[in-house]
Amino acid sequence: IAQVMARVKRAGVAVDDALLTALAPALLRARKDAECLAAVGALSARTASDVRCGVAAAARSRDDAQLRAYVAEAAADEDTLKTLDDASLKAAMRGLAKKGDHRTAYSLLDALPAERRSPLLYHGAITACGRSRPIKGRTAMLLWRRMKEENVTVPRATYNALLHAAQGSLTENATSALLAAMDRDGVALNVVSYNVALNSLAKQGRFSEVLSLLEAMESASIKPTEVTFGTAINGAARANNSAAAVALLGAQTSVGLPLGDPAFASALEACLNDPDTAAGASRAAEVLDALAAADVSLKRRERVEELARAAISRNRAAVDDDRLKRDEDILGMVLQNRRVEV
Image (cartoon, rainbow, N blue to C red; front, side, top):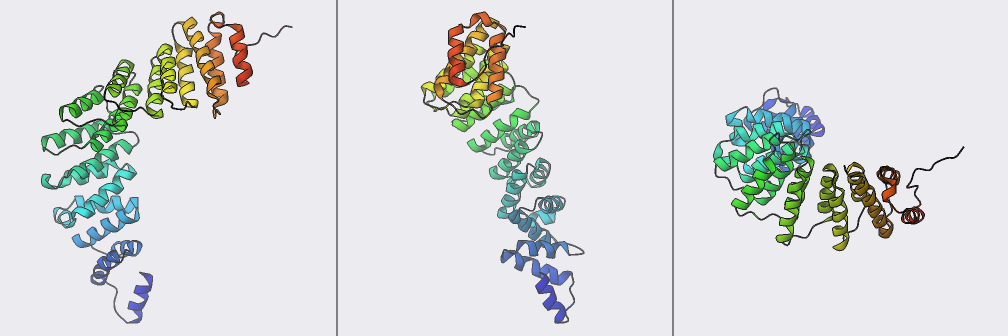
């Protein structure tokens, strides 16, 4: 725009709002987004058309600060909001969702008349809630209830976004309510749905429901992924359930999915915190056997070694000496506390 302004000045034409208003849409059509934003920003007073150009250019150029400012300006004025076509609204909501700007996304959606609140716009606002830090689960659930009240179709992708956002909801049964609604609406869960729901339940310490969901996943013939097992094993660790953690490690191996640091570390945490010290120590040895057999290149080797040693030391008599020595040799770890004679 500097070059354009220079030519205008050389021609003796005054640079005023009328000229900038005429330039902005031309620059937008030419995909000169930075120049368009500069023209709109230089206006002393903006019209609805100017704000529309600002929203579109900021969304396309991923200028988060200006997108937030222009969307807020549009949402505050009904006439300005009317100038935003569906493409501009979708682009704006997509930009807000990527940034996790749930406040601006919600205000934009709230300012629109019901007939313009499409499933895609709701999806963007809910996604913004899930990407906000902290996660705004309560706001996401409010948007979902509004969708139901307005008879707006909730697609699976939006349910997945809701399941993710539900982790930040203060309502304990939000995940269960969403799963029940998906079943009621005939929306089939995919592996992403299951993984997100499992993670939400695991974080809430609802391990029995984690196991139930794994069974449902198997019944639905949905193939689990490394994320599925990692989340479930983490849930077992939170529940101090070493038996389940070791069983899940075995199940992951049986379906041919590789094991990594997080799975082994979580399983050992479950063994370390198991109220039954003998069972925890014995199962920690089983985890080490699996680790030795897996030939895994550990990225957090010291952490895994520390957890294993701590779990075994809780009840050293529960673990066979020869077995432990074999794992030490294979893994190159010190798995038992040494006594130093003086």
